Image (cartoon, rainbow, N blue to C red; front, top):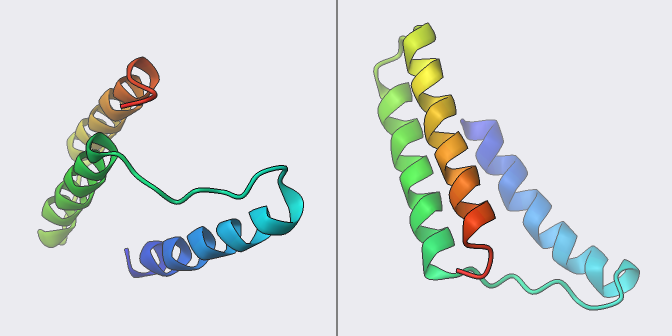
Length: 80
């Protein structure tokens, strides 16, 4: 999880800076309340799963199901 955090902290600012040069309009790094809530829930669920130090296929299926639900929510409420 440490490398995921490092990549996220590096990629977001780089995308914003690259959008100033490459994109027709600058990238706006503003998140809605729903996006922040889902991000918080994803971090919380990942922490709970990783805190035990052990995993199995059932936890993996549960994680994939939760992230599928998140994707459906983003698809159904894109402006939210």
